[in-house]
Amino acid sequence: MATVRERGQLLLVGGLALAVVLVALALVMNSAIYTENLASRDDAGRIDEVGTVNSDVRRATAQLMRQERSDNAEPYTTKDADVTDGLKSVGESVRYYGAQDGASVDVSYVSHDRGAVVQQTTQRAFTDDGGAESWTLAAGVNYREFTMTVDGNTLFSDPTDILTDDVFTVVVGSKEVYLYRDGGDFAVEVAGETPCLVPGGATEDVRVSLTDATVGGAQCDGLRTLPESTSGTTISFGHGESADGTYSLVVDQESSSLNGTGHYDTDDTAPTGPHVTKAVYSTSVRLTVDTPELHYETTIRVAPGENDG
Image 1 (cartoon, rainbow, N blue to C red):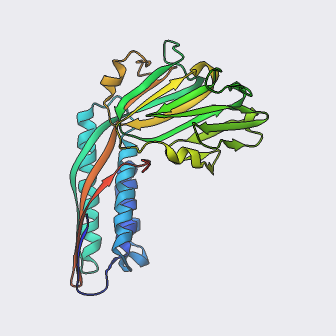
Image 2: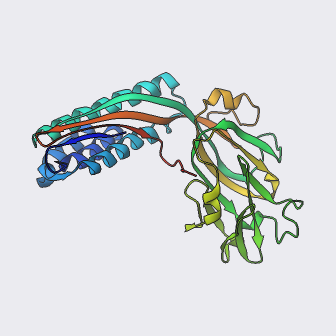
Image 3: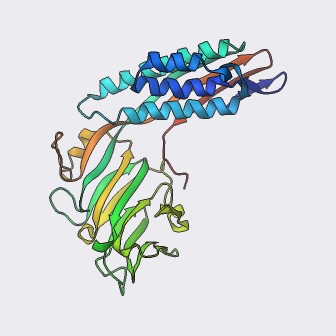
């Protein structure tokens, strides 16, 4: 929970928001270039609201976490160090730019949780690596950024009984999500809810986000009924032979545990089936701001793409 003690209007350094985002990018690219660009901006001393700084610290932290997904050869210990070192750089930047407007601003590392990306990057059936049609991707996990791109041509067409026909099913906790062709349309139906349709999508690749609750870019109310990301959920596929496509989700379980289930392709160099890569699932940082007008402090937990049920 944030703590704020007001002695005036809750205002803070505006250039700080831009500084945090640019520093996060600089960690990936060239920090010297980005720091120079930031220092030369006319608006670096502009006053902005503290809430904006909070939001941009979240974005910078999320960018650090996503960068750690790019190199699966790195051990978790290296990723741990990358996160803590990256946040030190963010903290140094916000302290410097905060001081330019008379504010004492601090961003400090609190903790993080290791995780893994469960993904299929080559278009194929939604079976496991051995061809099993119904299987569990992860059990009892928190999850985020769960997206699929599904070839509508490969879906079961016009089922007469969605429970007994071989309809591709995604099971999230106690909820079942069915994907099928309805005439010429691409259909996503959560059990007990109104189907969401993509007109003409039966012959297209359609993106489905289970955490953003969208189908083909449009909101899908049925997907909003899925369990919260932080509810310790089991995620499974049923009738995986009845759909082709790709998918990705991040879970708070380490890759070695998932690879031990036998469902995944463990070739780290060129996997062709579903596989697992190391990631950082969530990160917590402490943001503190002091000016002559206010004292603000809060712990920010960052886990990009979680839903809230």
